[in-house]
Amino acid sequence: MEKALVIGGSNGVGLAIVDNLINRGFLVEILDIRHPEVGILPEDKFNYQYCDLLDLDEELITAFAADDEIKLLMITAGFGRVADFEFFHTAEIKNMMTVNATSTLRILRLFYDRIKSNDIFLCGVMGSISGFISSPMAAVYAASKAAVCRCIESVNIELEASGTKNRILNVSPASFKGSSFYGGHNQLDLLKGLAEDIVEHILASDCLFIPQYEEIFKGVIERYNHDPHEYGLYSYQYKKASGRAMNEKRVVIGYLSGTFDLFHVGHLNLLQRAKKQCDYLIVGVHDSGEWKGKETFIPLAERKQIVAACKYVDKVVDAEVEDSTAWEKLHFDRLFVGSDYQGTDRFKRYEAFFADKQVRIIYLPYTLSTSSTQIRQAIRDRYKSGS
Ligand code: CTP
Image 1 (cartoon, rainbow, N blue to C red):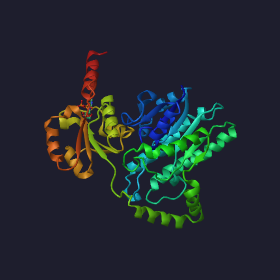
Image 2 (image 1 turned 120 degrees about the horizontal axis):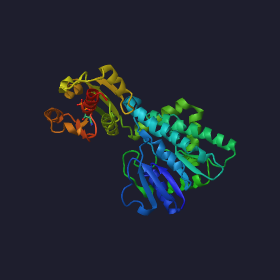
Image 3 (image 1 turned 120 degrees about the vertical axis):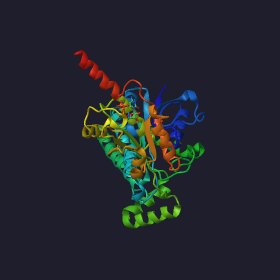
Image 4 (image 1 turned 60 degrees about the horizontal axis):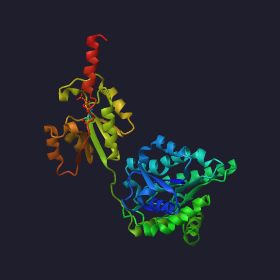
């Protein structure tokens, strides 16, 4: 059976495309951060695997690229928000660029042997009309989509020059009804027509599909090209009047503290799990283990350097003795800690302290197999026995 891979296929237009491909007889592999709503697709016609474009698993994508039964790749994963630039935290900029642009291009690269091959391979990516024109109040989204649009446009020329008939379809709509892009629910019925058109263009190995091009967007792009500044001012007023702007802080700041002596996999698991539940992770490193009656082997500056180099960590600070004091300075939204601290006097105090501050304390699974104390003890034992 022919298989298709849809990245971001659990929601919105991705889901509608999956539905369309299933109706055309494909078995669809869905990669997404969420499972599609139960019952919305026939269970025996798709497989689901977790995949987060914020932390792209290249091995997983490479395995799909090596599967000859996969004949079609569609990438629809992405997110955006209409708001003035000043309301974007640097973490949101980084995340939007990573998901919408960097990871998307990396996936295309991992599939490139298939795309460039002389065997038919079908491929499409969700761009956006904002990748072609200035988009005040959607500046970051536009930047990410412009990167995708320019890349596909350029690569399609390389593909043509190489002699293959395969192309990457850039699907670049404006906002459309039925997607959960603006926080609404999936309405598959509203997306069926769009999905049908997209799939037809993929099957035709087209380079570009802008829905409602003749009726609307040809004129829009012409107006933009004629006078970008004039067009930008108009577009700004239009968005302001539409009431879609979400001018508010939208970033979840996480904090955790620890000693991080003899950095081990328990530390790594904790940092990875914490980062999954926030956008920006700040880690406080305690100067020594003294605060909990323990010694440290590695100097503070080195422990901070090691923690800072971990890809899940956005910022390292010197820890305050109390995490509640750190909050006074950092105003984080979530406090993470290993489950070994649940029920301790210290965390009972924090639960009381944070109760009226909209800060969630999240206990993450403690990794049983290791700890700095265990490693220090193992080194000592080995040293003593002289082995
Ligand atoms: N942690 C964890 N799993 C482990 C060890 C630590 O989840 N195996 C978590 C702790 O719960 C804490 C954070 O890592 O939230 C930092 O702890 P730290 O004090 O540096 O780690 P330990 O290895 O527990 O250190 P020590 O043995 O010196 O107490």
